[in-house]
Amino acid sequence: MTIRELVIQYQDEVKNGNLLPERASEIMTEVASLLGNINDEITKRDMEYNQVLLYCLEAEKSANKAKIKAGITAEYKSMRDARNTEKSATELIRSLKFYLKVKESEYQNTKFQ
Image 1: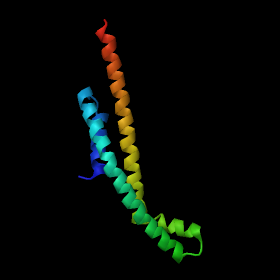
Image 2 (image 1 turned 90 degrees about the horizontal axis):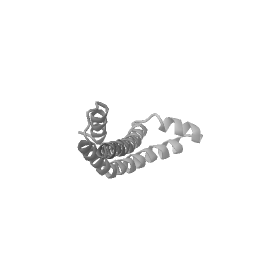
Image 3 (image 1 turned 135 degrees about the horizontal axis):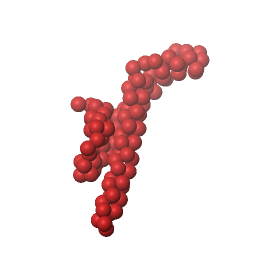
Image 4 (image 1 turned 90 degrees about the vertical axis):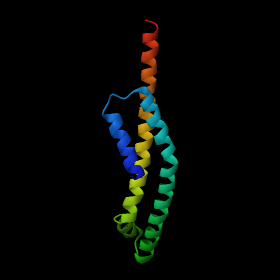
């Protein structure tokens, strides 16, 4: 299973609801631990794309045409997928933090009633 698939799986679990705070905390920890791997993947994909971009720049007279040609390659798509995975993981962590704060607040409010 790829990192992207793992993040999507966690997103689906959160989206389906009925999430206990303990499980939310586990998911948040697991996704946070994946961020290092995601960053490694971004670096790798950026380097691959930059090689393609350099090749296109050397082959074309215009930098704009070279960027357009490089932007339709598989390397560009892989780079964008890696960056989008990072954004998804980061937003999932933020959402889970907020969810846990709300649950903590609910617990504190019911504790004194």
